[in-house]
Length: 329
Ligand SMILES: Nc1ncnc2c1ncn2[C@@H]1O[C@H](COP(=O)(O)OP(=O)(O)OP(=O)(O)O)[C@@H](O)[C@H]1O
Ligand SMILES: [Mg+2]
Image (cartoon, rainbow, N blue to C red; front, side):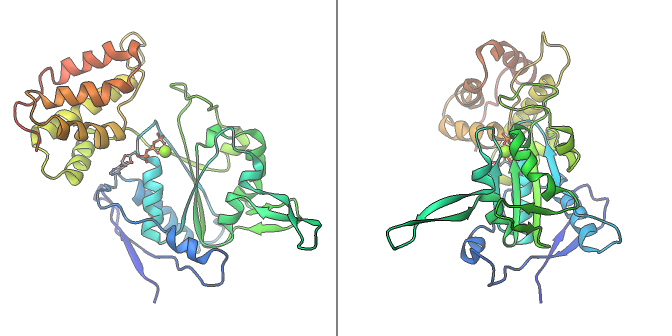
């Protein structure tokens, strides 16, 4: 009996979705590796809605409804909004080996698709042999491929992937072999929005390539969502701190999205700042008179460009001014 997994709608509106977890057969290449690459569920993960949407799409796909072709989701959002984490947690829930493959500009076709290499033939001569690249290797068995930084990919990489992503659903290797998309392979992608701000090395996605994805936006989390993530991960963190950090995050990120370049901040407050760095600063400085201020100065401000510090301070003064006068934990 295949194991089941249930996805609840965090908004409380849609029905719970039950899906069958994938199995890893013994007769695929890299069976051991695939077992090891199924991610652990993160006990601190809070579904802000994306995991449930993935489950809805998956449900439609396995329902066998007539005419549907496999769709691939690209999650678009600013740095540190949790895109990769959502995709990884979907792999964990579904029991799929997770292959995260960054497509940054320097990555060449040969790394992703493969290349022909020379090997000793054991008789003093050499012979050439095809070696799979990262994507090809992942496609040979059950896998969830996360092609991250889609909009940093070079043209030749995009071109190599076109056929895989449309209804042809296959990758043609230079050897003449055709690697078909298995029913137990899922392809996802992530990218940063390029309309609002510059991300080094990224560009607007090539139209033909973009058309091969369903693009879903990952917005900055709202105040209640930040609070939920903080309390899930740090159950002993005092409420005053939870509220203050959540407000800082919301206000900084609202300012990041503001139109008026005179007042807006140029660096968003990422979930890594909020969930990893600030709480660490609070532990380090828990005995100081104003631990939040101290943590802010040492664990957040250094990530902000010098010219942007004033804007960050404006938000700090508007939202907190003075941190809570109690110990954080
Ligand atoms: N839904 C969530 N619940 C709990 N923690 C989360 C959640 N989403 C993200 N995080 C935390 O935030 C961190 C950043 O998330 P992630 O790396 O997925 O961001 P990203 O959007 O891929 O960023 P980038 O664009 O910079 O690659 C993760 O390491 C994780 O600890
Ligand atoms: Mg990422």
